[in-house]
Image (cartoon, rainbow, N blue to C red):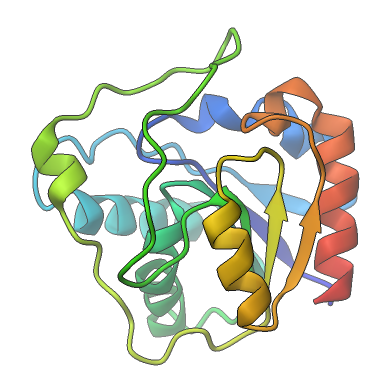
Length: 195
């Protein structure tokens, strides 16, 4: 598929710093990197989704969008996609980059693992971890793919394969966008092309 814009959604446990220089390495694409830090009180998920929608709109993202979620942003993809459909912006695909999958029953790896310099990790309390993200009923409405860059999300990799999604495994790091932006961009580009 040929996207109009890639939207890189950072985990609510980090900031956009977790994407490092990946947007520059994805030079062939238009890229939007929302910075969401005002989801600091309940309802956390709804605040994240609303801010992401505002930033995607403000950036003038050109459809079709490909929503790329990292870590705990994965479960927030369906409501973000629903907000884009409501704004009449086509979502053409979804990529989960070392991320949790939407829906109940997906396990949450503890913490963010080894964090490279330059990545900001946000301190979250038990009420954040206990909150269930909303789920859109008609999701997925476009092709999905999974890019595993560490061994942390093997349950999600198995689920993605069982759903018939395109799956790629590249042993970089959970923070592959920071550690190897060029390699991550190449793997992401190949996965998106296969959707």
